[in-house]
Length: 143
Image (cartoon, rainbow, N blue to C red; front, top):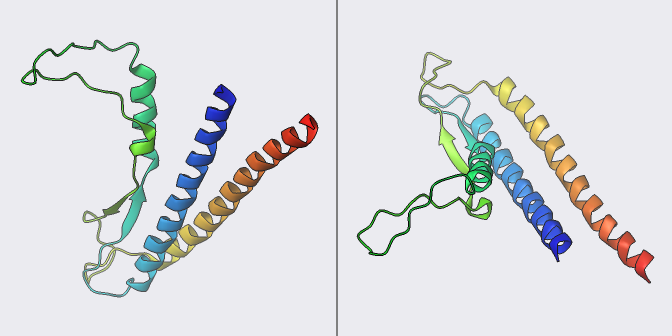
């Protein structure tokens, strides 16, 4: 049963990572398309830092002090975050300004980001295929 949960978690995480890369591609392409628009501020996708927080909260849950609440007016202690609830967020960079017109998109940097996103997507797809090949091999061996 544990192996099944591990497989499901791996596949779920890989699917989510593929979705995040897809969103990153869209956001980066939008940055490039608006690289000459006055006042446009670039966006990026934040996912990994929130995912890390969720895993850390889960890992630290056994060490934390947990209050028991017996009344709805009591303050609940912090419940560990579930990594499956973490969603990618679009973040706008309002701080930097690269051009006199207020636009902060560096088209060359964004183009390099697109290449990196594509490579990471391909790697994630290969990892997912590997997971399913392992299951297929186990099934074939068990016959």
